[in-house]
Image (cartoon, rainbow, N blue to C red; front, side, top):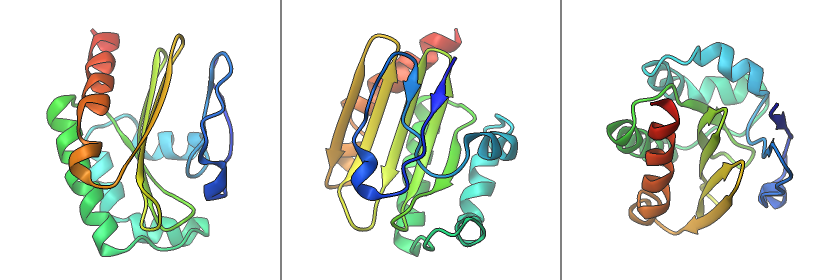
Length: 154
């Protein structure tokens, strides 16, 4: 059982891990899962409409720069592991890219005001890192997480 938690302030971004808990970033999980339906191409459609989704959910509108960065990260992630990623707006005008599987939770936060973040949470391990640029973000931590995701799906 996965318990999701709402974190509406950027100060709440610290991963608070308890057994089978996952940090909740963005808006209601069930809504974004229904929207994505686990279809890999749906993430691109959601990213294309992210400004409208953010406005409808009461989040600041992500800038064109953040949308472009999210597209670059999503392309990189999909190249490493095709998956039905979930795209959500974040409370500071940022964007989250998430992958949720029974054994692993991966979340990337692209922020216009703070360093980008990568959360990886499994039943046995939790890792959080911050990155000043996309090159650092799309590096060993995220690549290892996507490899773990691929192994979970096998």
